[in-house]
Length: 344
Ligand SMILES: Nc1ncnc2c1ncn2[C@@H]1O[C@H](COP(=O)(O)OP(=O)(O)OP(=O)(O)O)[C@@H](O)[C@H]1O
Image (tube, rainbow, N blue to C red; front, top):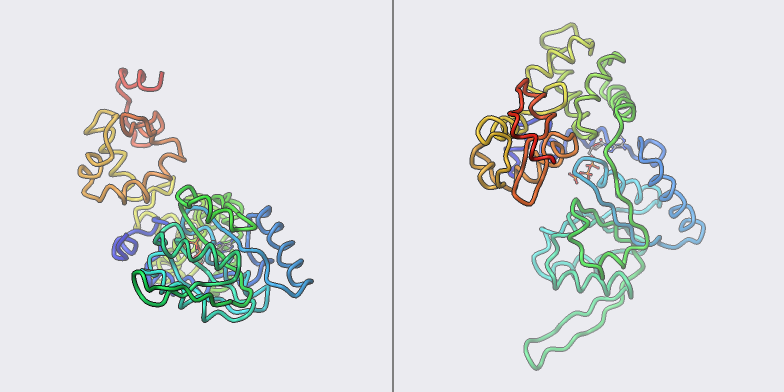
């Protein structure tokens, strides 16, 4: 998604470059500051303590889950807890196997290599990565064609932390090279309230408990969105209020940014409205639906749809997308009697 799209909406879970800079200040630095995800935290803490006790690099770690739930944050925490540095790259940034070989061969002992969007690595780079992760070796190919030969180059021990929003797209041989795989889940409203009160403390703004509750309930279970909404409420309180982040300030600011009580934004509502009003509740194909709302199919599928499906507003069927009863209700519309047959 283009960064301009991300900046245009406060509730999309992706982050633009500007957004990332604002986020950096709010990132938890250590495992005990990381809110929620208790099981993952506990498992990770065992792995890190054991590795520290042995004085060795821990197993490779794969983190999966939707955007904005803390994968990058956890990778940084892993490096910090191990007292080592973090090298960051991503699947799309690696065009050729040689690019990855260059990164791997410059790693220092026990460093952590964060590979974001690992499902987007090109196949030759993926194959090079298997060997590097398993045998701590890269084969540097010299020459071309029949005269080409591979010179093995040993690497110091290191840990790969891979992150993906699409774990299902990872080929099994790559998945198998990770000794620990964790799936991050959406956060509860109570956990998001804790994220918000920590962030408000760091920003030095007074956040009322009711306001924290209101923002949390409209944050789509996502800390990145919670922090973003907090900053927008802070702006409102500073410019139009008395500086205090009260319930009133939260509601007024969220109205200005068109975040509705479920946390839906303009694109979500456009999708629901098109589904119900133009297509009678569906089923309708993704491409047709995307044209109707003036967006790319990929944006509708990866940005709007997961949350709408999770909230039970949209259903996916082999014949296309359908509006669920909750969608009609949310828009204040009455479902046509015939649409009931879609669910039987
Ligand atoms: N468990 C948490 N506790 C407190 N803050 C969190 C937590 N998880 C995420 N955050 C906040 O949310 C922001 C987004 O997190 P992060 O960048 O780690 O997400 P991500 O899963 O890597 O997203 P993407 O896949 O889009 O890169 C961080 O800046 C951090 O402030």
